[in-house]
Image 1 (cartoon, rainbow, N blue to C red):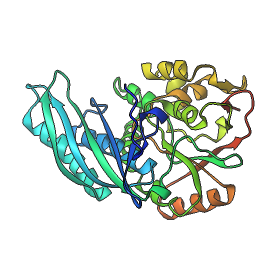
Image 2 (cartoon, helix red, strand yellow):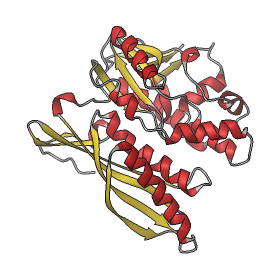
Image 3 (cartoon, rainbow, N blue to C red):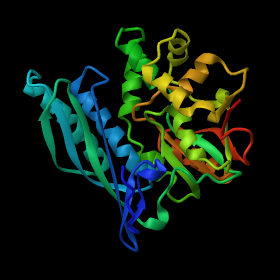
Length: 315
C-alpha cells in the first residue's frame, strides 16, 4: 500500500498495531478497526456474539472506549432470513454489552456467510497503548486461555465434550472489556490482543525488531482450555497454526524441553483471544487481583528482558 504522510495519523498500518489512530484534536484520538470472518460455530446467534466480541477487542487493546460500529454481513441468497436476523441479533447484543452503538452497516450476497464489525473508539492520545513498546523488566500477562483454534477444529468433527465446547464458545464470546478496564490505571508499557497470528505471532510483533528486547515465555505457565493439549497432541490443528509458525520463523527459540503440542498451541490462531500486556511486576500483582475481583483471570506468563539471541524465547 502507498505510504501515507499525515501528522495526525499517529498509528497506521506500518506498525502492525491493532487499530489505526487519528488525532482529532490534542486531547482526542479516533481509534478505528475492522474484522469479519465466516462462521466458526453452528449457532447463528452465537456466531454473531463471537464475531462482534472479536472485532471490538482491538479497541480495548488500544485502551480506547468503543463508541460506534457498522455491521458487515455477507450472506448467500439461500440462507434463511431468520438466520441472518440471529447473526445480527448476536452482534447487537454484544455491542449493547460493550456500551457501543451499531449505527448502520452494509450487506452483500456471497457464497459463504461472513459477519463482523467496523468499530470506532475514542481515547486520549496520552493514554493509548501500543503493541510494540514493551519495557525491559516488565512482566508479560495473558487474560484468556489458549486453544480455540484447535478446539473449534475438533468441534467440527465432534471430538470434544459438550462441556468443553460450551466453555470454548463462552470464552470466544467474552469481551475484553474487564481486561482493559482493570489495567487502565496501571502503567501498561505495551498491549495487544491474541487473535489470528496466535500467541507467538502477536508476541513477535510486540518484541519488534532492531534487537531491542526479548520476550521470555514460560510454557508451563500458559493457561490452556480443557482438552486443547490432547487435541494438539493428536494433530488436530487448523492450517493457520502452521502458517503462523512460518510467519514467526527464526524469531523464536523454543527450548528442547518444551512439549511439541504445547508449542503448537502457542502458534494456534485464536478467535477473540485475550489481551497480552506488559507492565511492572508490582502492577501485575494489582492487575491479577483486580481481575479476580471482576470474576476473571489474568496469568503471568513471562518477562521482558534485554535482547538475548532471539526476540522470543520459550522455556
